[in-house]
Length: 320
Image (tube, rainbow, N blue to C red; front, side, top):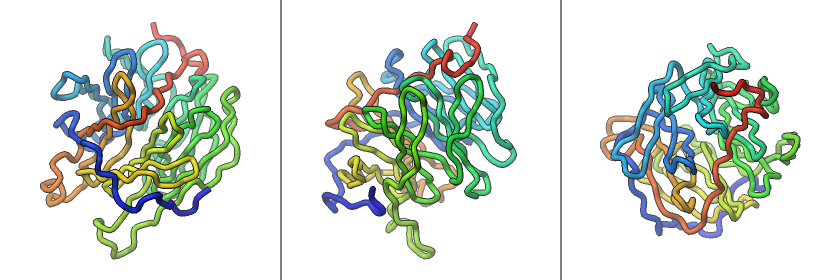
């Protein structure tokens, strides 16, 4: 466990070539995943209330409007997608446009919404929440047998969900608290162990300029070597952490607000990074024209593939 991240090298790693995957920005891009069957990237625009799909040969993403704020998007094994929104859980079929509500949310939608979510190796859906008032009243839920079960609570902004390569460790972050946790995970039952601190980042000081701020942990992914990659919101960085919490790489970004990353491409060695432009100053946006765009870069180590949610495990009705 590491209370503060320590680094094998204090200098940024600048050996990566970053470029936009598309120059069409989202307000707040989030929850990217690479679909191995379709060979394309899906992600959401939360305040833009949209689902996006980006193919390698496309200049701009396909964009579908949604009826409320999406927190994330997860692929279904039987085809289609699950989209946890503020107003509940929805199933969407990009091929047909079918868009069906499956469940109401397990919280007061006037006070919070779904946020980061992923499926585990058995196909259960895990999704956390974010509190509108930024109070520590958010939770982590697991969907199985047709209902959302609260598994952990007491945080403000649920983020950073990921699993170790052997599936025995779950990572979970509270962005506002600047903390990433880890928990023992039973792959067969879905049971969670006690939450323990994995790494804590230094919060921004009251008068500290953004240029000196390292950021707070947002979305994350794990590579085949078991290292935890995390997007540092407002820190203009991606970090690669060892399983012991040591900073192995610091990758500077051309935009202030990275939100999440995923591994994609046929060999899972392309990192895609979603970013945000919502509520940023005119001066920042002028200096960072890629803000809100999806960025990409090649890396030497492959990431873990996305896990598909399984409708029989979830207890949801099968798609017609």
